[in-house]
Length: 119
Image (cartoon, rainbow, N blue to C red; front, side):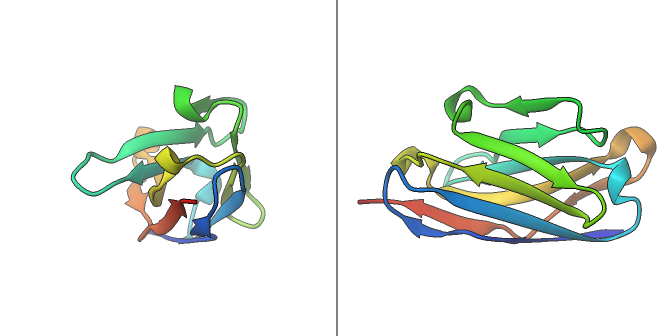
């Protein structure tokens, strides 16, 4: 079992930055690929960024490339999403995901943190 707790969301103006943190507790954190997803009301949850357990491959959706950076600290069992130059279309609830399906460890979600970008 892995418990994920997100923090760092808030309300900002366009062009500002936020850093989301996902703190994991449980076992085998370093065995999970980690990701950030986001969801707005009435829409499906969409993948924003992922980072492999070995940190050698990062993926970003087109709309956040060059503005968002995903990173992880396996020793602290944390994953981060640095979000710069935020835009109103980034407004959403952001969720942390731990994917250990390939290793038979299951998949886990956090409760989400709200990001609102508005002038």
